[in-house]
View 1 (spheres, rainbow, N blue to C red):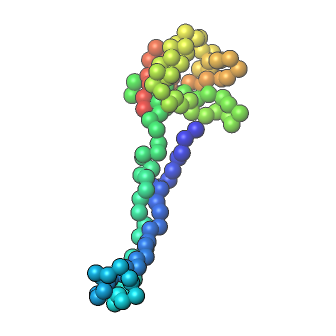
View 2: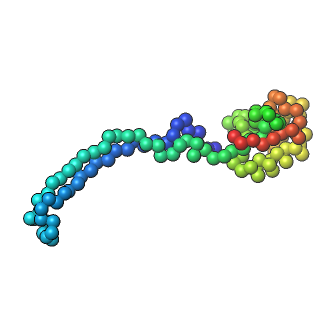
View 3: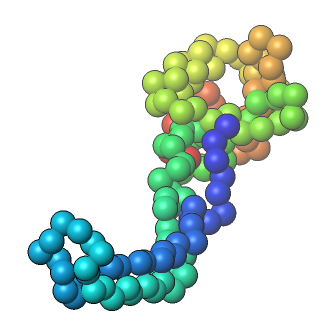
Length: 134
């Protein structure tokens, strides 16, 4: 699972300033003889971008039905059928290698343990499957 942000992470930013300027008496240690001017102010409120949403999304990999096909395979889980996503390319390669040693059913389904891996509708052969970035 990873963040699926619809927008950048932003913050509302503003600041206040208090500045003490010594006009006379700055050459002595005692401050009782100082003549000062106090300045204060504040900034306008601005919205700043802390992190662009693309920076939070890690590179993920999916196995697809073949070259030029961008429909990923899915796997059955407690949430129903979901896209099978890998966060490491090497994990996707290892899983694809394992898939290619299986024999799919007539409905383009492979069983991996108790999980049903379902091939896309335009699936033709396990050897045509490729790995692409998600």
